[in-house]
Length: 250
Image (cartoon, rainbow, N blue to C red; front, side, top):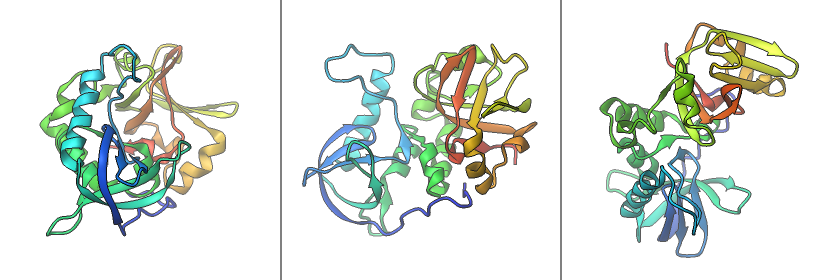
């Protein structure tokens, strides 16, 4: 998935040293003390230290262990593109291989232990990641075999609602696209107070148009949405980045 106008994906990884510890399925600490976040993927969250285990704890720990087994103590190459508000390095990570750098995120996605983040599309880093995720989804590997994490049907708002407060992938056919005030509503049903909806702020419409994704053109298309599920009447996801929306009926 290549998005026009998006920042180009960093393709020149540099030696970053060895991995000292792994925090969760997409975060780790280097030997020099730097914290790194693999911003191109999403994984089930682990509860904060001391908090009671949640329903997703086992899946989050499985992703963490997979990352630890893959990179723990290993020397990594990082292609960096900034830092988040917590000071963590945002990067793609690679292991050295005789055939060339091996992408860490692709390995996790291919095993079905991570999902592609919307952030990847915004940096034109999604092509190899989407391909790995698609193969794992088709084979029902890892998280894709668990109804708690697999793609949710937009026609079943109750199922979407169960993911409230966390990242989810929702797929369905867009019934209509409407504007009201400062918001564009991408509707997957005719009952606004019950059915699944995606909202786009009109101030971001130019960003979506610049990526070749006109919100109004989504009517009648089958799309896949990535984001955090909220509830306001029916379940909804706010689309801030073009990478959150993937047209799947092409």
